[in-house]
Image (tube, rainbow over the protein chains, first blue to last red):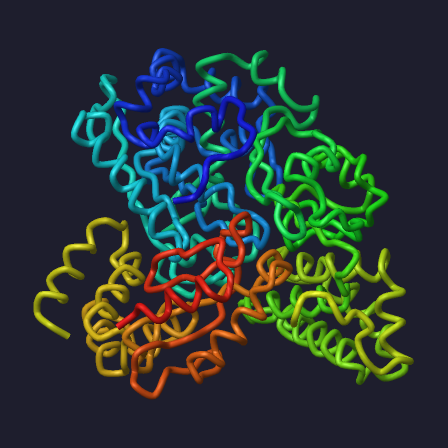
Length: 430
Length: 153
């Protein structure tokens, strides 16, 4: 079981208490009061509240959740679905695992509020295959709800409200975290993303109207309903309200999760994790999981919200902060990153399938001291050919971190060429 | 495939608007019999789902957690994504391989352990990490990892 976070706020306040993962333990801490309030409201009023709270999706793209909920057709002869995205696979991100293991009822309560607000009859929670404990905790929590009549026909004490929740396990593929790749996978197919439009609200899983939200996004919803929009907006920034669970990993003294308001300075989060290990100097930081451009050590003052990070040429992504100290060879980092994307490309778009392979091949060649004149120029040009060309954003996600490395750490790449070897002997092994 | 497995698969169908939605859970059940799904088992699954065998094979081979070849009695996966690599997971993978006498993707000669690398396991805060038969073992060094592996029968 994953450790409770070192700093907490409303979301993770009770995560250290294992009983919080059970229905009685959750209710003892005020759980399901948000749902009770929501069931006394008109669905449109809930959608409006979630929209005006400014809650943004916590799966990486940061789309305003209430706006997404508004895309669902009001009237529909076909069954409407919710899909909860628990396919967390972004290197550097491990917050959804924490929520599913220690606060599964938060997710279920958020889903039930969404179900009433959007008129959805069924939810599939897609949990990545490796997260066996997350799936078990959710299954147990769902069974508790069924036993108490909180799921099924006319459930949760509300006549006319029917909902069921099914846990569906993935089987090991990063691309299934992309929402339409996930829908394909849920249909029993290869998880290859779909061209959009149509968007999931019109044509989602099994062709039914579907809203897909991340695990953490749902976990915030009960607090908004229970404590109010103004209370929620008291955390974070104007455009990015609320807290999030920042993961800090890599070369820090105490890696882990830290719940803090969006907009918290990057340097403060690294300090919470005990600072750079062994008193070494910082070299670079990936602020938002593997897919986002890596920042230089001069950017520690940046606020951890999308607006502040995009002004520095990166993105919030999933808030997974990866710290690299002065011993790190950034060409090796490029090798590790490009290997990941080469392995995980679903293969349907040429720019991505071929581009990720070339990024890896060139990085390996340079790192191994076999770089040819012109390799750096090709490595610089490739990402531009992979951006905004493909069915989904995976290809962009593969290109961005390499662009960031070349922008801020070009010296590392250049110094490999004349020396015909890697000058970073003591760095991590490749 | 055993009759009991077929029955369990058929019970999954009504959890989805179309029965094909049950394919991934069905393949987990099929794999539980022998640790892998060979062509014959894939053909039987395809029959249950009214699919062509190739449609089942392409799903089987798309996902890392399904196997089409016999596996060791135990699976040991080392996460080699960036956060784990920064904390020495690639050194751990190499040394575990030397200890077991196999490389990534191989099985020990006695059929005891299949060793492999895996991309991000979501344990970046407790890196490096092994996934051993579905169980997470976190905050490891070479000694603790070797002990875990040696205890597998």
